[in-house]
Image 1: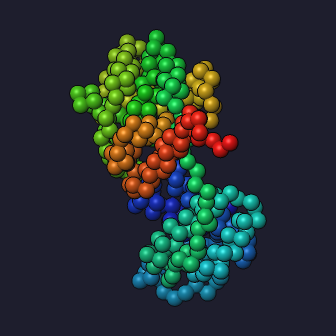
Image 2: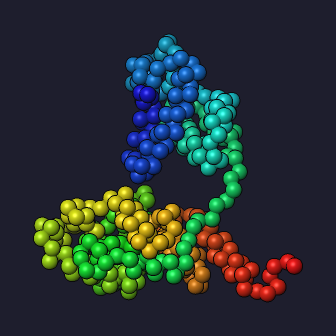
Image 3: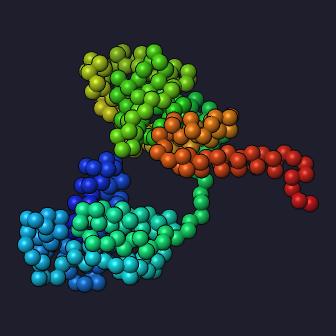
Length: 338
């Protein structure tokens, strides 16, 4: 289906002004296009009609254009939509048995879109102020035990450069709690061996310094030491002080992708017989949970994870408390009712 011009403008705003990742912007765009497609079918209008671009320009640049467009416009229907129109769309989604989490995400997309449209003057009012997000069952993030972490981290071989790279990556994910997107975005110059830290670029281009534990430092150092001995990485090694060399390289001496990290993790999970649903994000959850289990304060964990809001980090306190409760139930002779 063709993209409505205002949908494209909204996606550009997300990437250019809000600095959303391309993946997140695409997800928001897909939700908004689904809304537009629903309205298109309801009203028999084509998003590709040239009148749509004129209508968008009229709304975003009112001083540059004159008069309203006489022809029916999908852009006008979207921008001038009221709460009943939104409820009709949500009812349509409800018939397709979407999960509460998916419904909540689609509502969040529309909230963001109408807030932007109202601020830009494309919409006179924001109908989402009258729409409530359905209550969801709170799901605790998944974490694995320290013993399972140690099994996983011991899996990569130390005998070749790619095995050392993989151990360095896994040790770094668990040692720092950084996101996999942040891991693959690291450059050689972001490694500060003297201060035992990493310079990380997070969501919204926010930067932070995270400490590296001794095991991660050692694993990275062994990987880096072997790089110049492998001819595949000779050219990349010459660039190490230029700010352009990725820290973790693939076999072609290019930057690793997030998907490649996931494939490597899957390989080692199979080798050691751990749950195949464990993901790089599981190591982030485990990092936070194990810190709190061992007495770290919530504010410090928030800063290490790069969370903007403390409430986002607080979910780990529930997980930590649940682990204590489970241990109590398993160990105390009078924990269970008779």
